[in-house]
Image 1: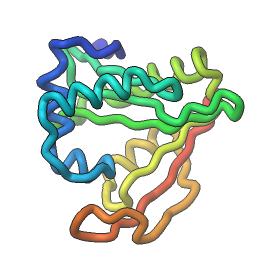
Image 2: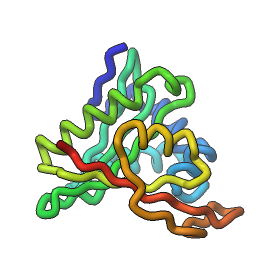
Image 3: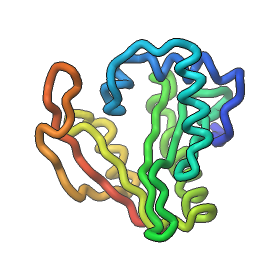
Image 4: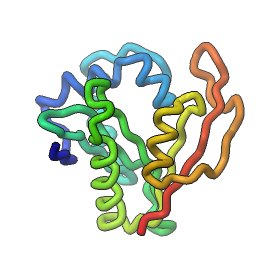
Length: 163
């Protein structure tokens, strides 16, 4: 399956809005659990797309199935924070690995990134296994670092040096 990254289009709105409003996704991405109106979702897409220290792309694999982003890009240090979010229907198909490789290439070529970092809930074993497979290394675990509205969760910090 061919995977590509592209700038969001109007036709991507239903997928992005569904992901943005999914409480499980919100918890895993460590954002406040809320119900976002269509105008709030559109404002979020605009903010992500217009962030001068970021990059935001829709993951397309025979149609939109998620997004990847870089935030806090620091061109002097050559670093950026990485995030990925896939619709459940896209799990287990190799889409995340392809999207990550494409974003790594973009981060290196466009922003001169030498390292990308991420945060993931320690209970998200599937994501941690994926990141390890993709050559991310654990740099730190902060205990009771994130309150998800019910529990204080441990957060694992990881990084990958780009070649």
